Amino acid sequence: MTVQEIASWNRKFQVWQYSVSHSVLLLRSYHPQKYETRIDVAFPAISLMKLQPSYEPLSIHQADEEEAVRRLGTQMPTHGSLFLLNGGEGYVCAAKCSWHEDQGDHRTPSRFGPLRGTE
Image (cartoon, rainbow, N blue to C red; front, side, top):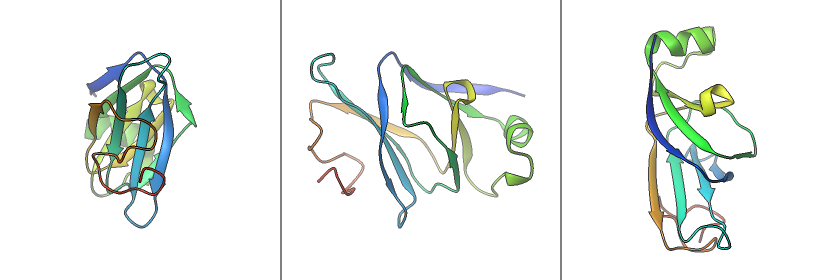
């Protein structure tokens, strides 16, 4: 059983947006007094998730099939990957995990498309 680190940041991320119609989750780190940049993390095609409202810091690991079955058992989805947030404090089963860092603020559109609340 293995997990592979995908990314990690020593900053606070919040659950920013979830689109039911597109099954897309957006986590965002934005705090202009602390950080010069904004980071968006997107998970498309979500089939299962367990989240906290925020994570500080945030690490994302991708579990192999054996680890995913061990953690989820019969809930294991038939497609996508299991991404563990902070060692399992939360998780997301999604097609992939992508992130983007830029100079945007909390109202600037996300690189991951027009999501409600990110105009």
